[in-house]
Length: 345
Image 1 (cartoon, rainbow, N blue to C red):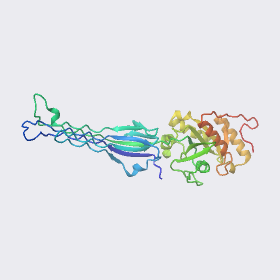
Image 2: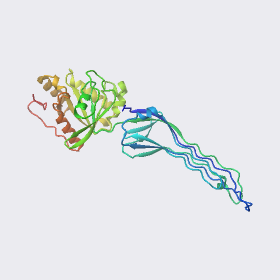
Image 3: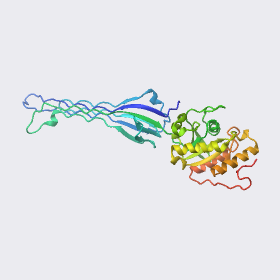
Image 4: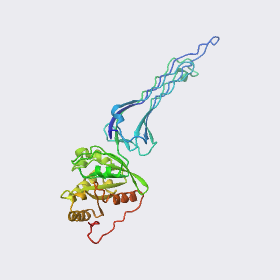
């Protein structure tokens, strides 16, 4: 299934049905009086979050959603039926914005959450409604009220336990493929991943979801490289796993660049727990690993995990740390005196 995290759709609630002008006509009843029924209410447009969706791809093929109009009233005091509501199903994590994208109209975070976005128009009154002691034979009725029309933007922010982030070609897709049953595209060039990928990890008797966020570049917080769309998926993750390509020359600069883009996008993201892993140690010399881990530890002031997505070395330690954090346990930052890096060849 293709992944789509943004879509524009058009909504219209139903018009109310018109009231009826009618009079009772029966044999032997000379003055039957008015008996025109009221019109039915137009259908609403409701959104509901469901569990079996994880993309907005369906909205690429259907952009217009219209609720049913209310039915007109008729004689013999018969009221028109209400129009059927339009139910729009969206994945968990969907946000609904107005056409200008400035105002958040709805935010779906739980299965079964339902929001009425547009109300259908009320039905008109039949002439029986207007009968009174001074006007016993009204010859007028009111039409139904019109429904509402609006265009909205849908934006999907994945709800995952772990957000996997890093620069392009940091090895995120390889890590996801190694630890889950997901099959992301893996190649030796930047921007292999162009859309977020999800995978489920089974570790220490528990399952958690990892979201592979496409590689971030400088200026991502300002929209460079579709960065703001990718950064949005990080907001709902419980913990961040930051992969750094150990084969590049300046690993500290790579770490600081990603942290800068996170802070520019949303300061709240900076408060999330972050695990840092130096990746691709299978392609590095032992001294190089030790040196770069020491530099990263001083810059990040936290434990650094050396791993290889290709060979699997160190992967188990990272997964164990992630599962502990998701369970609500505090990760102990063990201070290793020998080399201040947490790793020894």
